[in-house]
Length: 160
Image (tube, rainbow, N blue to C red; front, side):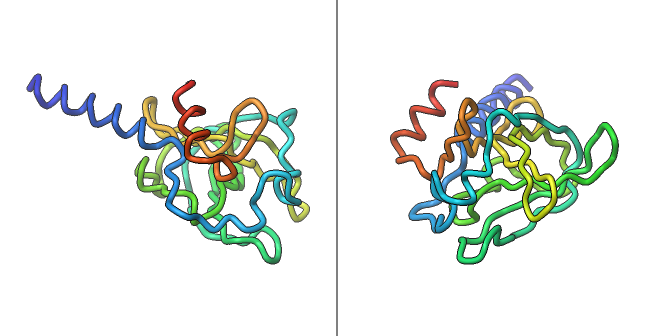
């Protein structure tokens, strides 16, 4: 029994370490770059977080010519409204590292922005449970992890 508990703790710690953005090799991030039109929508002064049930995970193209991204629909725990969350470019993200799936209870931190006439949350990180999270932007200023070198991402994740 003790070995099983120890193994579970080790697996959670490994998952936490691997879930820092979950980047794929050579991602297509066209249009998602730091300083681009889409990136300028992110304003750290609009920081907020929501908790709720993950209703849907889907692909979307934010603006013409951009690489496909991943978005979430989250039913807000407080008022049961469906909130839209933009995570980042699909070719950069690997949701399997945190086992994210529809029906999960999650917390998403990010910054609100108006997009296509609707309020959306541009994600900084997604937490699933207490020990597993996936960061996609730097918390203090929203700098996207997909615009960082692997070394910069490593420094960011090591500093948490």
